[in-house]
Image (tube, rainbow, N blue to C red):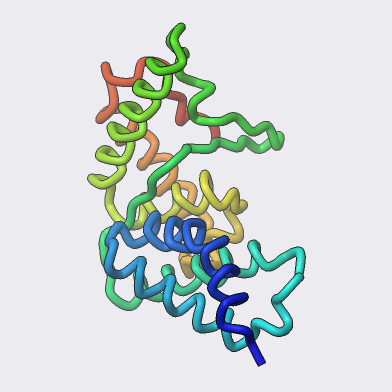
Length: 187
């Protein structure tokens, strides 16, 4: 039987990651909370096998992603994402979004500029069509290959590539002048 105090500590350890994963895809606090709650209900049912398992974080993130995508495909809500933008090109090179933006000299100024850049990016992402946001979230955040994104979204590979390309172009136009060195060109 699961010890309630132990599960509560487990849940606190992973709640931010689970909620953020759901929120990036749904762009709705209430829906993300519902999805996170459902994830932890599933975890509670399997807690005896999850306890102490080194892959529990990945399992929780996968369940949160799948539940959010299922929710979105059912309700066709607006999709968005937040936090750090990651870019991975076909050669496997990976760069943080922040590394493409020049850092100010003072640490406080760097943190403030990073927050401002994220806010601009989040606002721009909120204006993308749902299909483009979903493809970009899965590619940049979940670091999924195009083929896996196509399977997950149940669309063609060509549509995934087109959505990512068009989404990047729309972001570039929307952010022109705000974030000078932002690079969305890699596919």
